[in-house]
Amino acid sequence: MRNTIAVMNAKGGVGKSTLVLAMAETLSAKFAKNVLVIDADSQASVSLMVLSTGNLHRLQMDGLTIVDLLVASVLHNEAVDWPRFVVAGVSDVDEARSVYLIPSEMQLTLFEREVTKERLLVRLRASVGALLTCAREMFDITLIDCPPGLSVLTESLLREADFHISPTKPDHLSSYALEVLAHFRGLNPEMGFAENLGVLINMKEMQSAVDDDHQRRLMEDPHNRCFSQAIPRTNALQHASHFSPVERSYGTKYPEESGNAVQAVCQELINRLGAANAARATSPPPSSSAAPMRR
Image (cartoon, rainbow, N blue to C red; front, side, top):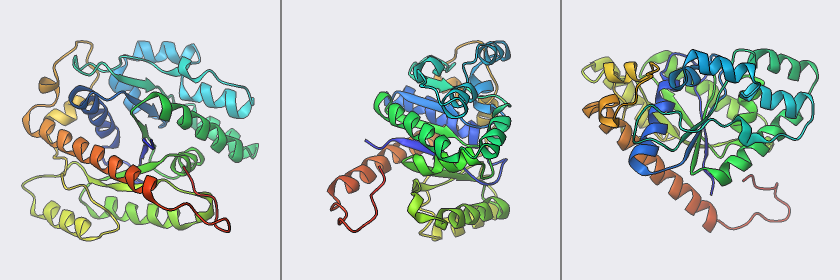
């Protein structure tokens, strides 16, 4: 089943990493899903939300991050035992025991520079594709926390993942970034691209008429395929991004409004995944003269 999802907006500051973690923990705690989070952002935001700085530093020193995986497979052209890079049980929510992580680090930007310099873009995409193929078989859902902007790694992830979700704040700049992504998607269609699973309105001020207006305009555009549930800006969700050395219940970390909203989004996500996979299964195969269909 297609289940790998790149979470991406060309603009930063839309709460993407916090949302990725909240969705992963909710899918695990409330929907019994095995969830892999791939931290593909050099800022390592998700990694720092679930790992202490000491543990993350140890993984970096031991060569067990997404950077080390890609350096081996792309720069050195070596076979990689990818499960070695997966950290189990990273959530501090005691009901979310099935959240896994491939952590990141800041040297990811240096790796991308080497890929460009050595003209290894094809090998990078093949390596990303192989990783996601393995993840597709091992996990119910894989969420990829992509950095803002359109780096060579982000492009590979968007072309090899099955789907993409675009979190956006209900404001002009965040919404305009969706147009940038749509324009990028239209370039080189023969190279394939992740299917749009939907725009997810995040960090919404629920009592703001301005935010309401931006949300209405976003939802009126059918190309956005907006999720029906917006994620509110709450203190609980802001605090959820802080690493906690002590386990807590789901309701403590995501109380009431916050938890209800994320659960509604995750239910809709599961429904959309099911519908998209069912549609693919019943669609006719391409003719022999057509370009090969992506996964």
